[in-house]
Amino acid sequence: MKARKDCATKSNPALRQGTEMKTPAKTALAVIGTVAIDSVETPLGKRDRVFGGSASYFSYAASFFTPVSLVAVVGKDFPEEYRAILKERPIDLSHLETLEGKTFHWTGKYEFDLNSAKTLDTQLNVLLDFDPKVNFTERPECLFLANIDPVLQARVLDQLEKPRLKFVACDTMNFWITHKHEELLKVLPRIDCLVVNDGEARQLTGETNLVKAARKINGMGPGIVIIKKGEHGVLVFHEDHFFALPAYPLEVVVDPTGAGDSFAGGFMGYLAAAEGINAKTVKRAVAFGTVVASFTVEDFGLESLRRLTREKIQERLELFGRISSFTTV
Ligand code: AMP
Image (cartoon, rainbow, N blue to C red):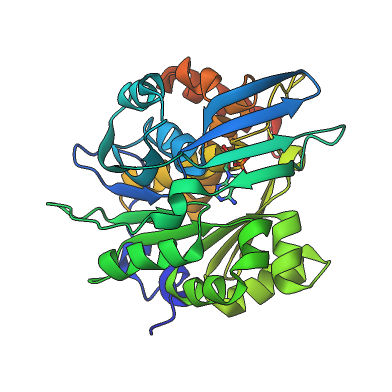
């Protein structure tokens, strides 16, 4: 198997071309991940059976930049009104399977520290029987392996990675690092970019220092490593480039659930629509991801994303650029 480290080097032509974004008409981006029913408690409230899931947040966020194809599974209990939420956006649902049984259900709680959720319960339900089969008339160029069983991530990669995709990124979490460690390690050499939070980076590598952890992850395969630190922003390790960006400062955070997936959605959506993937587009993609995530946390579930527009993203991006630059006054 060919390691994908060269994605971040001059040897990959896709990484050397132009920079800015055009919204492509065809579906340039696919995601596999969870479509879930969540029960969430934060210091600002409690919601039972809200719409969630890594792929739901991701695809909704990415759809502001490019059409997205969603590969996921739900059970027969999945509410029609939640499916209708996905239909509000250019999200192709032809690979959203419905199986006999219950939808994946996550129960989580945030206490004083909003940067990390405490998982109270994970019911895999129909995820246990899911065997994704992808069949695109036009293969998407970019793929995001959102947080889900790495065995399923690998099955989608098996079907899509040849000929070489423009960009493949992956997310995971403590649940899979603990329960499917070997399977996850086999996915890493096949991707260009890993997006994880600081706790996950430490757990995956055994390193407390995040710079060392990122370098170790680089050594496991991906040329780009993005470490999310909640309200403290992100660190981006991209071969010899290093980039740090704060989070957009908000006075009120209602529900941090989905921030990571929305970050990834904005990041991948921007890159899928960009003409090339290089140090400059990666940096801008990180800024767009940060801004989209800042909207998600302003309400429970996908509610804030549902009120979002491309204009609001642009407006906040410009303000964010001004407040995070120290070379201009
Ligand atoms: P985050 O962006 O990290 O806050 O992700 C939140 C979403 O992840 C929730 O909507 C959950 O449904 C989903 N989730 C929680 N645990 C898992 C898991 N083990 N695998 C996949 N998705 C999960």
